[in-house]
Length: 489
Image (cartoon, rainbow, N blue to C red; front, side, top):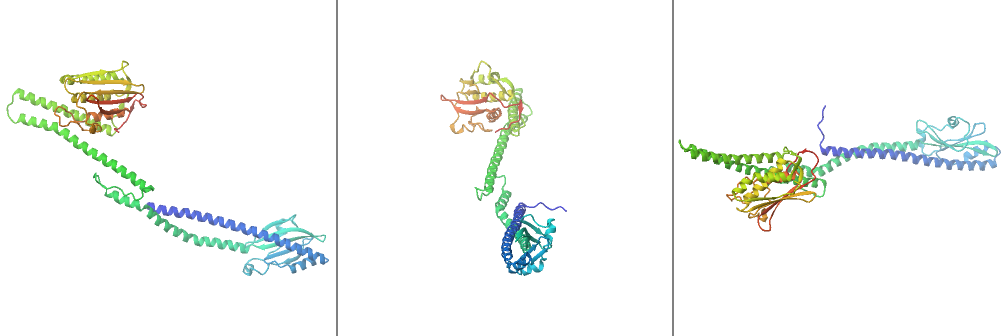
């Protein structure tokens, strides 16, 4: 039969009960052990005192009586210790005197067998002990504890045995064990109930968080988990989960913005193409010039649409880590020079001069040439778009020994200070209403991803004399490996 898994509350209560059960069992074993040891120590001490007292009595009687037998009989008659049996052996190993157990603890005596002193020599395997000796003679009711020691009285050899019944001690131990056996189940039952109650109280914030989590939706204004006590473990867990939910909400909001902006960027060229096609097809006859203008517009918007789709595809692959960085040995000066040549026609159309100041050694670097070419091309394109006609774009590449620093400075209007931190966001354009500035606002976002994928940084600032400066830093020591998966930070 297969049982369902227990809840956390039940497991905590059971663990609490099991630990207490182990502690109770250990306490019971130790208690019985120390009780038995204490009883044994007390019994041996009593037997020693009894043996010494009887010896003194026997010596006193022997001084007054002629024989050991007579002295023993008189000493036993005068002996007043209760619950102690005394036996005296003479030199022929014959019992010449015996005093049975006293009349105290009558109940114990009725149940306990009488002490048989003849068992002692048989137990020892010899006639007399060579010195004081403690031993236990077992029986069905706990046995007897015996002290046997030789003695010379008036020139005659004798051995005195004193014995005490262990029946009362055995009964006390049995009663203690029975008390443990009776109380332990009740204590464990109460412990389980208490553990169940405490676990419920301790886990109640979890239940509240579960109910609240079930109501949380993807809405940006959705509620968060309650933090009952921020200093305990559950409070810290709720805080961490709330932070995670905030990050997820921000990611979802960013994704929504991304989809909205992407839809807008894609809709514009599609709408232009459809409008041009509708206009051309609205009349049965058109001139060759009309068709050429329409096809030119369609081609231009198709190229724009292709660029947007390519940029979106690259960013989406970067987001999920499917665009690896292929590192190989390149020269940054060559990559920058090639990128500058690619945008030369765009710069000449606005009479803008691109001036490159590159190191003579070519700036050897270990990086992805295609991605870096895209970064530099986007930076040059951005600088040309925002520069005023008949101006200059200055490109510098310096080497401080550990980092390459590449700056692109234009002579445009610059970037408003409150927008410096946003120009690397997707689809963001500082002068969105300027008809002379085209693009989808993805170039700098792609540049940031590529630079950070190479372990570098990219930032923007305003030049003291006007215009904007975009600064890229690339560490000369790249992480190990020729190819690695990276995600946009």
